Image (cartoon, rainbow, N blue to C red):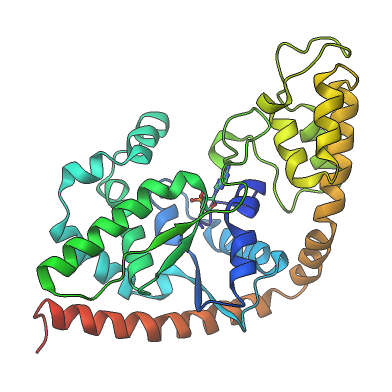
Length: 315
Ligand code: AMP
């Protein structure tokens, strides 16, 4: 995940919850990708350390255990950059220009740097340097995982078998909508952060986009098109009842949103309390990141020896 600020419900439900579940059964590397964040936020880096702290707080409060997985900052493991450079030699520019997120963000955010074009290739290096079999991500990342698979295949064909072809692992909710109905994203400013207070959450839910055809309280709604209902499916036990009441015009949006906000706040209560506790001891966070970087460097170092040998960069 990029350290661009506090993580939101999209990050939590689309990826982080899977990480927490998988850490018991897999050797796992959880990276905070600071170099990636520079593809967009390169002008003002004054808050970068603060943002790294925010993401690590979100990781730990959601339940990642540094004794079970490596939690670290990308730039502390320089091998990612070396592998990215080598991959850049075997990857056509036209292939990178076809990546959907490149085309979208280039237009939306006006990004046009060399580093921004290479971003999914750096991500391929982030994945393949750990010889990962699986990558637990949200649906928006699937084209990037496909690129990582292609790069692994091409490398193996040219220099001999070094990398497995990684597969994406999705959660039950691979795309979480934001309060305006588009994909929840920090850059769209439509997110509900894990660390928002209960009051902030309630306020954001109260202005959520709903079915535009449901104008009056008793109009029948179309919950399957409504982002509020999408969140009910995650946070409300009896969401089927909500579906029936909404679609038969027995539940108005104001009440419905109040119910959702209450359930959401209830479900996030433990994570938020744990986060408050962890905030009191920032020193512990930096130790966790140091310990994680050591573990990651050991694995990445081994892979790079295999890569250098395969490419005849060393004997
Ligand atoms: P990012 O830092 O935005 O690149 O996202 C980090 C992780 O969160 C990736 O695995 C994304 O697929 C996932 N993610 C981000 N936004 C959403 C969303 N709205 N719904 C589901 N997953 C998301």
